[in-house]
Every structure is written in structure tokens, then in C-alpha cells.
Image (tube, rainbow, N blue to C red):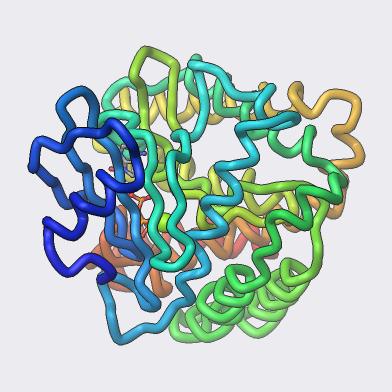
Length: 337
Ligand SMILES: Nc1ncnc2c1ncn2[C@@H]1O[C@H](COP(=O)(O)OP(=O)(O)OP(=O)(O)O)[C@@H](O)[C@H]1O
Ligand SMILES: [Mg+2]
């Protein structure tokens, strides 16, 4: 960790943000795995410090380039000027970037508050779905074929990791599950991962899952955090990722009411996303994109149910014979095919 003590961390923030007067209180924030994240309390406001070690913070034996935090900074910086400045509002926006320490791979971010993420917030629904669809649709539309943004957010490393830990694993995990067409589906997933190494057509958030969506502060509003996977890529990777998670949230919802809310959110998201693409819709989300969306949708469900990312999420601890796992893998296989 770059900060050897609380004093170190407080000194860093005080030096970086003139006028910030720390109270001395610091809270280590859980919820993330890759980085260290703290809330630093001040006399008037609190701030968030996020620091990337050259490994996975929760698994120090797994190396990971700390450059990821500079990608997050570069993505957040884009929202301070057109065209992305024009798509943010009180309804939906990322946190503001306050300071970047490139040497120590640390960021200071606006504290958007102690908000619950989409998977655990009790009140989600149509308005939020609409606002999210508009935001992601506009993100894809206004950055479509924008060469300057493609240069600013060059993040092939993340797509290489995704190829290795997600797409190229599909064959192995489907074989272990006993799927008859594991080789064929595995090839499709791997080919998609390889396609995603190449330059895409718009800026994508890259990690659009429920824990990146903090709900509030007011009804229908959200703050999108954690932009380290941002990439000049393909829109299906955002859309299918989010839809796979909305499917899993419905599948695992503990009440009919919760399930209904997630379904409402999903419908509103899809409708407003399409509308936000406007006349560019056939260019941005063509037939190829729709087909790829199916493959990513399936690959994400596999990763969260029988793949590397089962722990700490909805299907944690369930084995291959569990009906929930069987149902989810069945749906994943249908989409991959
Ligand atoms: N700007 C912010 N304002 C308020 N809370 C925040 C902010 N950024 C992060 N948090 C809190 O800290 C937690 C961890 O942050 P974040 O998801 O960015 O970390 P991470 O290590 O990159 O996570 P992951 O392992 O999922 O990539 C979040 O779940 C959220 O609760
Ligand atoms: Mg992250």
C-alpha cells in the first residue's frame, strides 16, 4: 500500500487539496476488491481516496498493473469538458475527480455519499432505468468514432485480462459442467474476447454491473463509480453486461416485488438506451453488435455462476447440481449459442 499509516494518508490529502481540513477520521471502504479505498473526513466535507497497488488488493499474490487507476482518472477527466460534460446531470453522473497522483497511483474523488448500490437498494425501478439508459446511450452516441477519445482512453490491458479470465475460460468451465457443446460455445466466447482486443467504436464504461451503480441521492438518480475498465470498445460489452446482471438480479430476487422492480428497470433501460442512440442506432448497435451482446451476456452469467467470479456475489457457494445454477447456465448457453 502506498500509504504506510493514517498520518501518511491525511498528509497526502491535505497537501493535494488546499483548504481541506481533515478531522483525523478515516474509514476504509469495503465493497471493492482491486484497490484500496478510503473515506477521509474533513471539517466541511469528506473525500474519497482510491489507490491501486501493483496487484489485486484483496489477493496480493495476483499481480495487476496499477495503470488501471490512471485509466479511471482519464475517463473521469473527460466528463469535465464537451462532449461528455453535456451528458451529465444531477440525475446521473460519475464522481468528480479532484486530484491524480500519477507516481503513487492514487486518486482523490468527490465523495458522492454513503449510497447503496443497485443490487441492495430497496427502491429501484422505471425512473432509474430510464436515466441509466439515457446516460449509457448518450455515452456511446457522443463518443462514437471520436478519435481524440479513442487516444485518451487506450486500455487494451483490461481487454487482455478479460480474454484470459473470462472469455477463454468458457470452454473449460462448460466442459466441467458437462455441457455437450462446450467446445463450440467456448470458441465463440474466445473469439469475442479476441475481437474486443481491437479498437472499438465508442467509449464504454467497461464495468457496468450493479455495484458500479450507487443509487441516489434522490429518487431516480445514480452515481456511476469505478471507471478503471473504461475502454474505447464496443457498446454490446456495456449493454449485455448490465442486462446479464439485471437478469441475475431477477433470477435471485428474494421477493416478487423486487423481481418486478428489476424487470421494470430493465425495460426502461433498454427503451431509453435505444432512444438515446437516436438516428445513429443502426450504426452503433447493428446486427453484429446484437449477436455479440448475446455471447457476452452468456459469458458474464457463466463467470458469475460456475466461473471465476462466483465468490462474493449472488450465486456464492452453490454447486453445479443446484437448481439456480442449472437454470442460469441453461440461459447462458442459450445466449451463447
Ligand atoms: N466517489 C465515491 N463516493 C462514495 N463512495 C465511493 C466512491 N467511490 C467508491 N466508493 C465506495 O467504495 C467502494 C469501493 O470502490 P470501487 O468500487 O471504486 O473500488 P474497486 O476496488 O475499484 O472495486 P472493484 O474491485 O469492484 O473494481 C464502493 O463500493 C463504494 O461503496
Ligand atoms: Mg474497480
